[in-house]
Length: 335
Image (cartoon, rainbow, N blue to C red; front, side, top):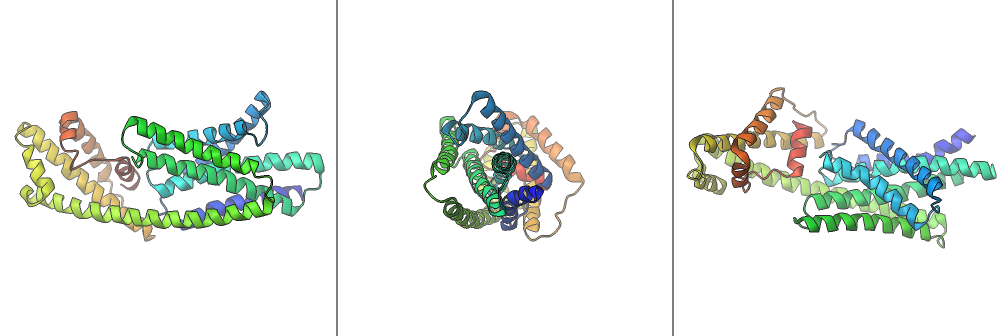
């Protein structure tokens, strides 16, 4: 019976994560990374539990909420730093699995503590423990992950202080939601949890739809421009496109060899980028993506060309080829 209670307490958490994965039409999340982030969430909870005992932190207090979100947020920041995530949907899913791992460990600890004290926890109570932990931790960490990825994508500004401010606001928002949840003891748990569950499902569904549309718009716009420029470079008709005309203006500013390397760099990047975006569409359609063995060598060649043209050359062609975090991610994951 006790084992059944533990299993029932984590069922809601599992259902939340499966719901998110079903909502994601692109299915780009890695199962290995999902498991890793979930384990990371468990470790964060255990660290928080140890800190609570060591520093005598009040359970469900302000310090408990702030430290919990900082610990979970550190994993999100690590994933962003290593460029493991670049899309809003993936940030939501990985953030949610971190929260799910944390919630799972917290459920086990809370249930164990309750069984020791009362010995009479019923099935309904076990499920409610799991639901409450799921909606709070998954909700807070997914919110934090979404805001952090938006900050990385310069949605709040490109300057360093603007990004720092956005990161701060992200953590403050997650902590605020956590604290408000802890303080909302005047609302019956079943009502509070029901409201949060409905909000979670509706908001995430809306987010995935908007994210899907944004990705399609980005792919359509990029592929059309990239194909046009690539065709102009191959045919030697640079003046046929605005990007090509700009590239011709650089011809007088660099020596012949460097300019040739710049054209090769642009051409190599465009081919890889078009192939990666095509794979993204195949992934969405549920079809196997096409990964060619020679692409690894081409990426290595792209890096070598980037080194040869130097910072000045890279800066000069930035208006044509401005490789953002999402572009680096898509080349790494889908080529």
